[in-house]
Length: 142
Ligand code: TYD
Image 1 (spheres, rainbow, N blue to C red):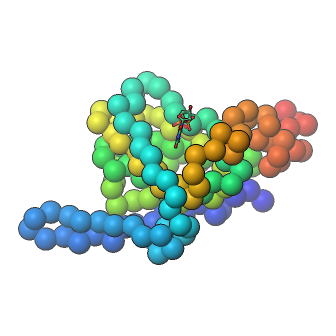
Image 2 (cartoon, rainbow, N blue to C red; image 1 turned 45 degrees about the vertical axis):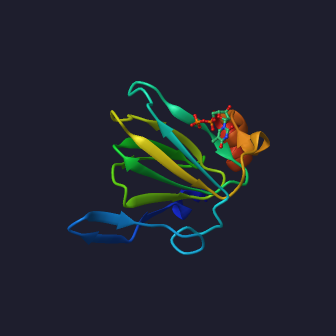
């Protein structure tokens, strides 16, 4: 069936003392791939949506390093809305998951750890194309 079952939510290790918290992620440890790229979204208006695509080959770890936002995941069979609001909670996304991000709080920062360098060719930006690839029978019914 769909790949939503491969999505993982992981907690980062936290070192806490009177000076505050320190948290970390390492390639091939908490992150199941070698990190080739880091990017972040910030100053996203609360009324607007980011994402709206899937990736052929890219795996990602996504977290709300500050503030909160929602991520809607769709594998062509099922969809799920997840609220991210902690710098200790990470979403581990496999390839071929359609995602949209919305409901950004004021000051929210979405940090993304990526398994590949940026490649425009890796994007599937048309939802019908995505469904055609992951669940073609749904495409015919729709
Ligand atoms: P996009 O991935 O569509 O943003 P989002 O999914 O958050 O809405 O990227 C927006 C633009 O930024 C697009 O022109 C590609 C460019 N971009 C890079 O040049 N490098 C990157 O690492 C990323 C993620 C995007």
